[in-house]
Length: 133
Image (tube, rainbow, N blue to C red; front, top):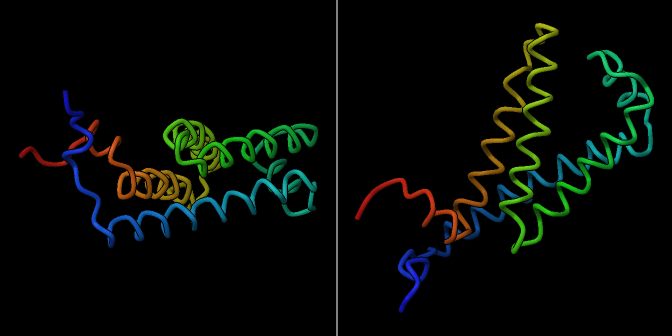
């Protein structure tokens, strides 16, 4: 029996667009996690400003780093996107609670994380078809 995944073609342009979008998302989140892990003053101040204690900066950075690593591995990219979505959901809730006008930034980043996978991964396009044949 043939898998339905094989019936969903991946165009080269889609594949490369997906890779570029995913890479940009991953690089931004790696920068964010690195700043938290290194406890850079901007990251510590920003985390405390949204209401988290200073001692949570390192664990948050590590959780984000692990999520991004899982996201960039092709076999586990969907799990990584789920974890990143959870992280960004918390970021969105925190910025909304503060009435920060940038509250949509984590939402857009989360959408881009999924768009990147959708464009490059047949499994996700099979699971969530945008149009029926």
